[in-house]
Image 1 (cartoon, rainbow, N blue to C red):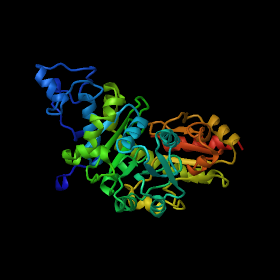
Image 2: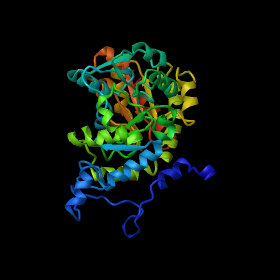
Image 3: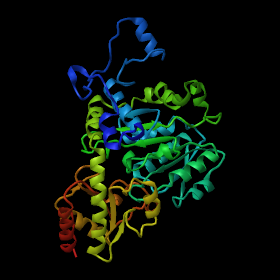
Image 4: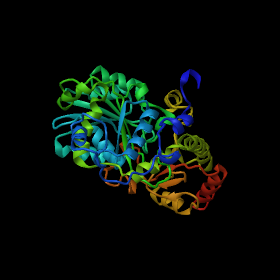
Amino acid sequence: MSGGYLGFNTLLLHNVKGSYSHGSTHIPIYQSSAFKHESAEELEKIFTNKSMGFSYTRINNPTIEDFEKRVTALEGGVGAVACSSGMSALFNALMNVLQSGDEVVASAGLYGGTVELFTELEAFGITTRYVAHNLPDEYEKLITEKTRVIFAETIGNPKLDVTDISALANVAHSHNIPLIIDNTTATPYLVKPLSLGADVVVHSSSKYINGNSDAISGILISGGKFKWDDRYPGLIPYKKFGPLAYIAKLRAGLFRSTGGCLSPQNAFLNILGLETLGLRLERECDNALELARHLKELDDSFVVNYPGLEESAYHKLATDQLNGRYGAIVTVRVGSKERAFAIMNEIKIPYILSNIGDTKTLVLHPASTIAVTLSKEEQEQSGVYDDLIRISVGIEDIKDLKEDFTNAVNNTK
């Protein structure tokens, strides 16, 4: 415990010390929609935010709170709100500060569902302006007097562009605009965006945090450092909560009213998944690098994209910013949609499945699935092409994965 700080894997196991019943090492699943109290006065204090406690699981629940505390500690934040899905967490993170007439400046290399959400927000008078290239100067060019949020993914999905978080935070803060980072693909194992200047971090915790594709969930974490001014009128009444202003507003307002709460069962499954996050990511990232190199050797015509490859435009930034590894997603362009489908249908070990972050290797054709509703221009901005296969690399023995892809490629030539 050098300097009193625990290592990542130790922190995963011991960052919340609860007094659980009967000596249990895990918090139980509090499968209760509401909680009884000894007096009417006690419940009144909870509802008026004068006392800590639980009243209704739509607002919070002991199992969910345990999960929130664990992720808050991992990301180095001041508080978190767990939601029913990653998209719910992203919606809450954005709409906690946005109102009609506001603008967002965002990276173009975003998950298709995120682009769809930004499109839906147009009906509420909120406009998103996308940078052509994920470079800090490009964001600054698009900032206007209406800009209220800058948004990016740590590692774009599936573009695999890497955001320079520190530099982008400097740009955002020079205009007194908060930076919201989606850290789903990297997780705090690779990078902690709040420590690099981000103000809010979002996860689709259905992915790497959960690790087993058995629970849909999302979570957002606040760094508590951003100074909200009059351009964010909804935050003004909550400034009295200091670093917790953003979280206090969300819990008392949008999150509470829209009902996008996480279930206790799924919170518990995420707590179990968290314990092996570091071990899984270490293996998955190592496998991804080796598989990316192998795919390059299999066919000279393939275009393999992975930040760990030296020829990647983001290799240096990823090396400097991430924790010695480069994520667990590899993409490969194989020449045509027909061949992409043929290879996917030929492989034996990976699942054809619309998810990432599983212990098992997963493959997907983004153009016909997660990006199918996007225009061709939007798809290409997101790094999606008809011949592209996205591979979420799992923890299998790498020799088996390499042999499987070798056979699939050779059998489809």
